[in-house]
Length: 196
Image 1 (cartoon, one colour):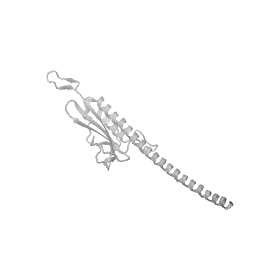
Image 2 (cartoon, rainbow, N blue to C red):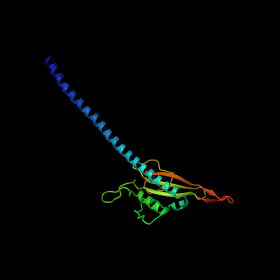
Image 3 (cartoon, rainbow, N blue to C red):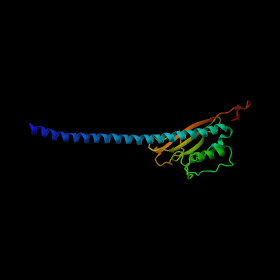
Image 4 (cartoon, rainbow, N blue to C red):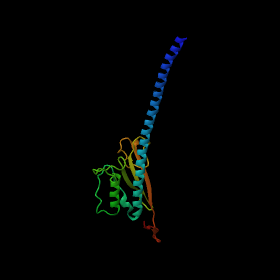
């Protein structure tokens, strides 16, 4: 009887050790899953920050074009502003030239800088373009902001701004807004637009 109890106690000690090992393995998988979830959340948070920053920059330029309707054609860009350009000195500029200069600097992230003066704000590779898609009244302009995302998605087809400048097109993100400049007053005899 005594031998039987002794062998039972020895086998129970081994079972407890196996239970502890299984628990450690399950706990390890749980912690690794939590770490992967944390990384995924950080990536999503960065994408969200870039998108919200792009919305602010896009709306800023849309407001500037709307405020200067008479000179809307002066806002059309021949190349992308922002990444690939240098920070510009905007002193002495007025109207559309000032707006484009300030928008270029904002795309480069000059609103936020480190203690050493290096630009730290903004999106990765932010670029902005303004195109005139309908030249006759009512004129229509497309304002676009593009930037580089962190993970590949579907390549945006809504604009060519920044196309081919981010390596993989699936890394390019884009937001666009259409601005329509209608005619405020027509000539009664000819019907042509007098005041855009």
